[in-house]
Figure 1 (cartoon, rainbow, N blue to C red):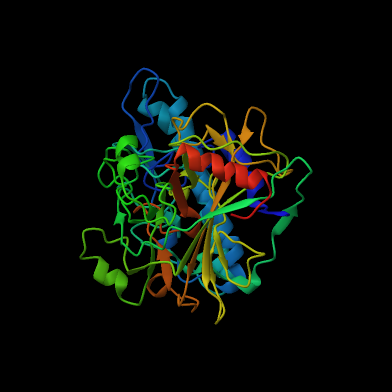
Figure 2: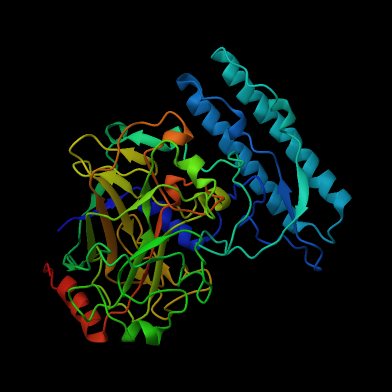
Length: 464
């Protein structure tokens, strides 16, 4: 069997070797998370950059200028990220040094970018008023304990860069799937590789097992995700779960020896007016109607270059990044596609043609360090295979889990504004419901006997 892979895998391999290396992009406080402390080495007060958001001040971007304006908005984000990284290197928390070494250069660079945005609109016969006032930034004290490193984490209170108080997503976060070029390629499995597959059938969360916890990233913390997760598999998973409680719980899986936890943020459909109605709610960001997938496929597959080793019990895997506005896209994944178009995936929300269903595809890492079931950043104990299909040096192949979610009847009308987007995933208030903030987690709670059977099936090139 040929292993189907995507161009995104190459980026994933590098991401696990440099966790958190993505650019932080949030106007009200960047760095590894919106509230990650930017403390000096001698314990001076943490500081972060606070810049006015640009995107909400812009009218609808003319089609002829969308690419140029998007590039400039991204550059504003990266400038703030660089400024926050520079702040972390300053000693003693000297405010004058911060102004001279960080803030003045930042404001000069922002002014140049904002001028170019203004010119882009002028070329289309428009001119947004007041853009020249948005270059000035300030320093504020950091406050909080965001998880950072591209993970679901603790609370974020700031608004997103270029989003201000906007909830998002925005029209340019959507794409007609027919406009996405095919981007899959097949890695031929060598004679020493493993072609088998194993499927665990665990339903679609008909039990409505949902909560705003994240047991991997924020164990012991209620509402650690700040957005709603769907679960299949283990029926007890929440912030208070332990390995013992997970092993003792019931499961939605047909194979009762699979008590693993599989989870992802819920998908919500929206209609005009949902944002205004949500403004009165406690969590005004995650608005709309939560919908369950019509089908969930949990597929374990082999490695193109070697046999697989059984997964250890309680191995934790996490793919994607819930905070791509804050952290940059270093750990982001292309997870979106449509049925009938599986040969192309995208990091935008796809608009599927009539008769085609929305897909979310989560590939978890398929290489393990052979020792640890977790790591401090929840990434470096595992890795994605290289473009050749082989695991990086020091890692061994394990069954690679791919979670594919299919949704029927999702609206496919291209939005004209933030208020009429057809659907979005739940997310942090800082992250503007960006499609590339999609993510999924997994804890292996299969019995040792079942773990061995899965590896045996894959290594014998069978379909189980």
